[in-house]
Length: 194
Image (cartoon, rainbow, N blue to C red; front, side, top):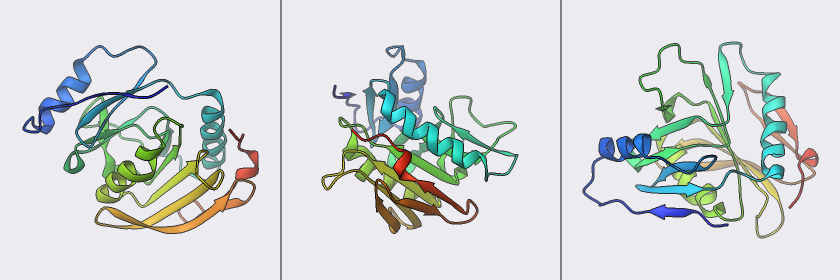
């Protein structure tokens, strides 16, 4: 199933776009993001997709500080890229009094994780990493079930402008290592394929 996109006038400002995103009645259970100024409505992720996110989340809980959280449906804002993105996982210090109820600034995230879906893999490979790098998020883990050469996991870091450097890339079956502050190896052999 492909994502439904709704274009916005190019002169519409960020606040109006966010207000529309917050106030519109979207289909229940769908994932609604703003990607490069376009509101994108996607179906809820499939079971295997969620299993991968759950396995990564379970490993991360063993290494994060008590005042950090791992969130599966938290929107992060990147206004400079006209983005309101909902990664599969966001690792961030817990905010006692966030500025907004619906989202946090992307710069607060320490790590974002995306698991590709067949219908939106391009966003996870191109648009989202550019936004995450622009926001200065230190680490981006892309778990690409639909990579052309077979399922892979790629860890990106050292953001400069809208580009990350590849820190590590493995095929499913090999561990991928996250540097400090995580200091963790995730065994991709645990991930379901397909």
